[in-house]
Image 1 (cartoon, rainbow, N blue to C red):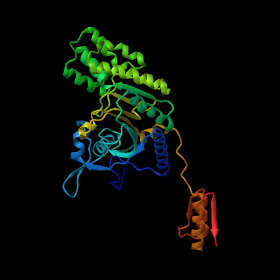
Image 2: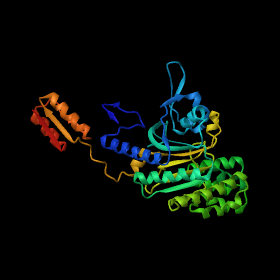
Image 3: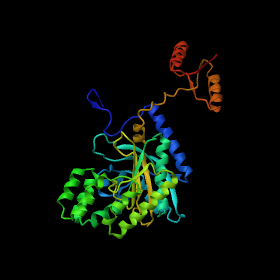
Image 4: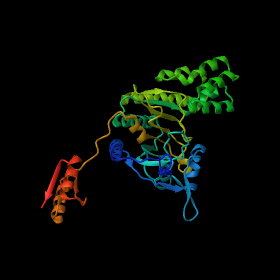
Length: 389
């Protein structure tokens, strides 16, 4: 946006006017209440941290998206690019003697130097981290909580896509793809570049049976029956364990009542490199990007010296609001009372008494003649106007 040739705001950030800000705050409050009902406790981390502290835990892709600056002592600082890494940092350094599991939740703004058109560089997330629980029950709890969060936000028609990092890797290895081919395959799948995927499989030296099994893999989505279609390709022990984990998580999610909202996608890859097992994303029709995403990251805390399993998810607040754009924004909030008068002491007393009852009250500070001030308050739709003589 420009005014007289001067850029008013940097790219990737935005203002929120009162109605939108109010909807955002109300949504965040409801989500925190939901998370706390599951036993999660809210935490707050610094907006910026030492680069050298977070650096070992950040993958290459995240390094390229960091906002860095130098403090007054010459040390490199970074704006937090996510909340999972700072939470892993403080749990590893300050809470390692606590009983496990630990449950934390948050609402925060994060910063990334996104270079894709339309991507925000400052955006808001709400999420949870479940630390110290390695089982399928923990995976299922986090996924079910993501479902509950989407439903609470007003996204009724949604789907959670679930995959497993080791299962995909095991299928590629079991089919006989070389290491170079596997890297290219993961990149193609991550970018949803299915043309490149098909060319890669077609030109590979793997068997015809394996080509037939792999070429349609990106298009296979569904229930637990999906796993039987690739089990013959899996020989790696970790991948076999991943299949078992997917089956178990599916069974538990069915117990939560979300089997109709969950589907398996064995090609799902999350952009962050710290995921080690179950991964998932949430979508709604008509929106071409995930509303939420997360998964298991058992190796992340070990990079801070504390070997502890963990899983979690983050939900994009602005993405949720964009998905609900068809819903009208709430009307701009107006106070319950407007008080004007020449007896300032009595005006203040009346306003204080009304506020103590839970009412919102504006005092006339406009400097306008009384008739004009009253007319202005009336045009704004303030229901009660008091004149104190």
